[in-house]
Image (cartoon, rainbow, N blue to C red; front, side):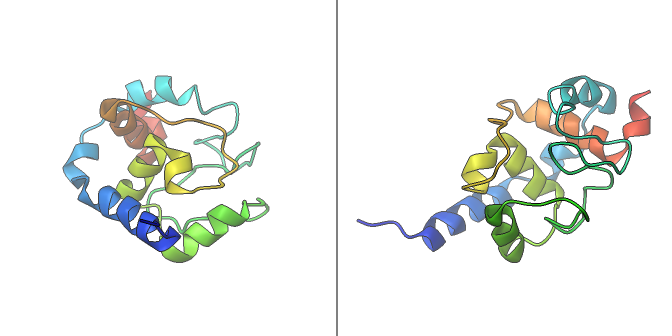
Length: 132
């Protein structure tokens, strides 16, 4: 049996949508800030300044691949046509396994294994000031 790209993409989206919103609703921003240190070499969440990766200020509910002056991979640009917004669910799925969600992404990060870590980073990204 041959699996097409659209079948695989559909399965990934179905898995992402099946993750309940509540799973990412109660994170701890302070813990998320500590976990975010893994991301800080390439991203910033507190100022709209691109590094190796795009800044993540106001990423929740922001259109995917939309930061000006950042050159996204063709894979991420294509992904944005199918999943247009960084919802909590979309971001949670991506943070879990970036290369599985966006095959060909230039993000080298392998992902976070623990749902609690994802929940905490999302809480931090929603409100970095809450981590203080």
